[in-house]
Image (tube, rainbow, N blue to C red; front, top):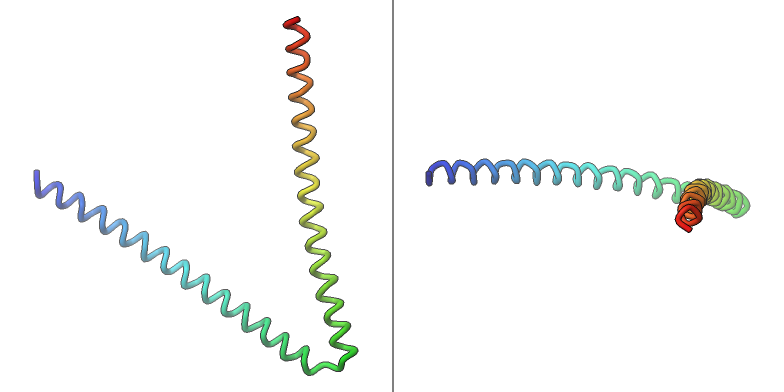
Length: 104
């Protein structure tokens, strides 16, 4: 009985160790990806510094347009979800109002 318990605990510890190793590997991959992205941004920044002041302004404007476009798309998606939720709630309200009328 004691040996069975010890084997069960050992198996649980091995499972936990395997899970932790997988988590560590996933985190390492995430760190690598972030480092790669940071390096790309650093290189883009260095290239921007080499541009003329006018080109830097144009580049900055392009970056801002891209940022605003992405933000606009996110807001549009949020609006669509809210509108869908509103329609669902209106339908539910109609159902409840009908039930109240039937009850009266």
